[in-house]
Length: 281
Image (cartoon, rainbow, N blue to C red; front, top):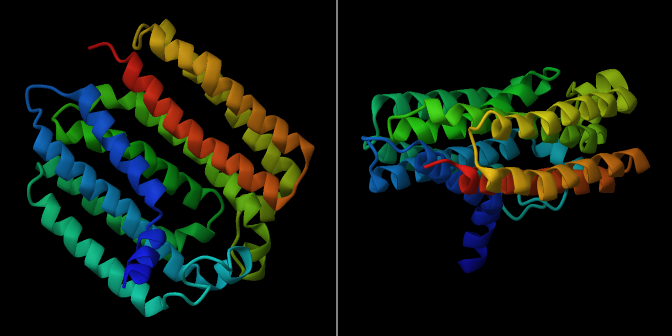
């Protein structure tokens, strides 16, 4: 029984679940206004994290054939759980999300509803459209901050961190496409690396990363965030971002793309910490 529970937990990507939950909580903390309610924020964070978890489950359901090539050790292609198991689990997650959102304001409910519908169609069809799927995933990563702000009645303060989250995740999505190119090509999925090649993919990543590095400095000089933010960005975030670009220069192996993808996920966490510590109360 515990093994089965572990498989379902693995299916939702627990690290991603925690990152989503913490992101929404941080967004709520930095955006809190007169409507701030800690209990409601926790409920909103769980609903948002479960939305991301459900997205991972339904994505694995539709990516079954692709993952047999790219990630054969994942829960579904390895045969540890069936596609039917995943589909039932996805429906259970949707039910839990619906129960939780009853407690939220209308803006938050609309965001969750639109997110779940869009993520489903992303997994079903949009993932195969060049850059559109990447933009959708990145958009909703940024929307986690907007959603956290909406939960406490203050979206304005969430705009800058939302843009940050969008940018870093967009870069990561493109890297993941390069990592998955073999399986995507075999299954007829059209992505940027397949259409334009690895060289142009790297060029796009480099341009986006440079824009990202410059963009991270602006909030400090615009006096949006304190010195704590600037110190973390300049001593940890941007050096790691540059290091990931250095790795891309070295080669085109799946191992390198996987490592860069993990670094970018770590940068998402570091960025959240920088924003939280640097926020002007």
